[in-house]
Length: 106
Image (tube, rainbow, N blue to C red; front, side, top):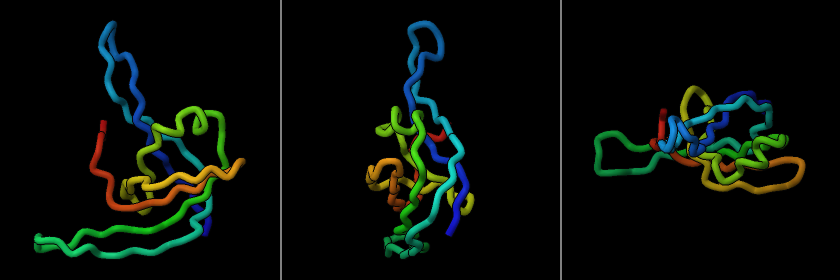
């Protein structure tokens, strides 16, 4: 299944002289969703948590290769999903998606 959307990176930038903060940077990419599945994880809460086990394959560019360790989430179906694994298969990356991303949101 074809995919077009945003991949989120968390990068540390100097926001003012001597002040460094983690900043979310989102960039658009094209790719293919190779595997699509979901599961609910039983918890103590009334509502179960949902997790997906999707695999997204995208073509690399210089930015993503330079910021490989900063990739944190993919926006899929209007939800930020955390990246659980990255497989480098030059010239492509395969990103494995997991639970909902609750990290840095600036």
